[in-house]
Amino acid sequence: MGAAVFLLAGYNYYRLVSALPTCVGVMSLAALLGLWTAAVPFAFGIGSQTLLWSTVVAGVLALIFAGYVAYAGRSVRTGTPART
Image 1 (cartoon, rainbow, N blue to C red):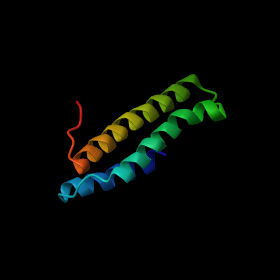
Image 2: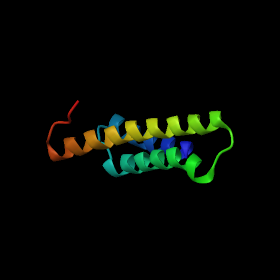
Image 3: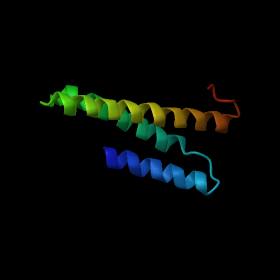
C-alpha cells in the first residue's frame, strides 16, 4: 500500500511540475488506499501493538494529505477557492 500511495503521489508531483492540474481521481485513489491501510490492522488483527498503531497512523496521514490535495484540486477545477 505504501508503494502504491508513493507512486500515485509521484505521478501527481510530475503533473504539478509539468504545469498540469492536479489529478483529482489519482489523489482520491491515494486517499482510499490510506483509509484501507488504516483499517486493515483491525480487520485482520495484527499481533504487535506497535505495528498496529504505526500502520494506522501512516494510513490516516496518507488519507488526510491525499484527501486535502484531491479537495484542493477539485476546487481549482471548478473555480471555487479551497478553504484553509
